[in-house]
Image 1 (cartoon, one colour):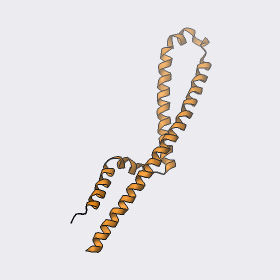
Image 2 (cartoon, helix red, strand yellow):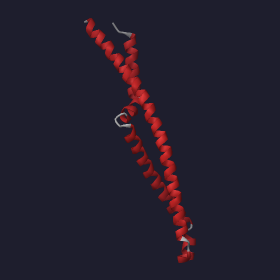
Image 3 (cartoon, one colour):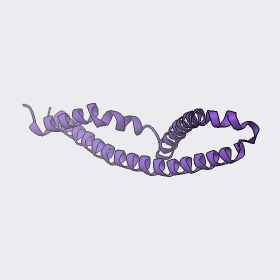
Image 4 (tube, one colour):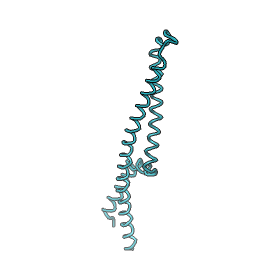
Amino acid sequence: MIDPKKVRLMTKLAVYEEGPGKKDLRINGYSKRTYVNIKQLESVIAITAAYILAMVLYCFGIYTDIMSRGLSFPYQKYIVHAVILYVIIVVLDIVCIRRYYTRVYEKMRVDIKQYEHNLYRLGRYIQKEKDRE
């Protein structure tokens, strides 16, 4: 005889495992600190690459001014402003990314706890069936 509660529970587990559970189970392999640090590192690398690209494009935009002024061009001023802007962007990015991925990890932990609870309930159903036999 098929137990409808067991079928619903197995369906719920399968849907979770095939949907958001794939990502959650992968994230669950990391500690919170490690996961957030990895995401921060990825973000800083991406921000750095984008910033370098933006600076190169900006330099191409003022290329004629740089070439016409030669050594009298205020290189130091531009470099200092670029570095200050980069530091501000990276600090803001680190703060925002840390907060965002901490929330993502905490939400994942809540979902995983529910998943583990459902697995425990399924295990109890299976154990009851074995005891009946």
